Amino acid sequence: MLIKEQDCLVFQYDAEQLWLQPWGNNAFRVRATKKSKMPDEAWALHPKPPAFRGVQIVIDDSSGSITNGKIKATITKLGKLTITNYHGRTLLEEYTRNRRDILDPKCSALEVEGREFKPIIGGDYHVTLRLESVEPDEKIFGMGQYQQPYLDLKGHDIELAHRNSQASVPFALSSLGYGFLWNNPAVGRAVLGKNVMSFEAFSTDLLDYWVVAGDSPAEIEEAYASVTGTVPMMPEYVDSIAEDAFVRSRISNKFLPI
Image (tube, rainbow, N blue to C red):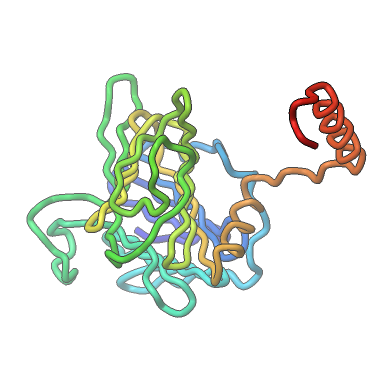
């Protein structure tokens, strides 16, 4: 079932509910859960920022769509989600291989879900999001700091966890013109394969991510900063303090050239 609730497109099927909400300009927050109530933690995101004024939600007999500036999300009445930009280019498409929609060209007997919730003892779920690799030549950058020499992460398997000398920041910048934040603090895994991309949280109560479309990396990064937070400008006196400290350090070591 597809319904509109204020500026949110809601999909409900069996025990699952999925929310598509504008979250900043040209961006959506996508959340799904099998709990009775959608968890309200914002995690890495600011509380809901103002969206583009021209948000449009359309529901027809076969699907529902929501448009926020340069980005559009479409979900079928059987639950498959696709995200495109304002040129109609596919940015993200859920990887589903089931028999639920016999009209889907990718209908299959494999029974693989784009959004998978495996219950675990204690009430949480092992959650997996699977996405089509719409272009094998796509390049993906970001994701934090890892002990590896690779800049382009396409084709790589990444642990979503902090360790000594490893910082996980699950924000990916794609050459296709989108930014993707896996908005879940759980330990997990990201596999950015050339056929399937997947994001996992090993213990959580919802699937949560943020996606933005943009015409340049700078535009995408600016949008990311606007919903997660920016660093305040340093006061002017910091420059003089840093300069004094530099000079003193050089004076204290006469063997180093100034």
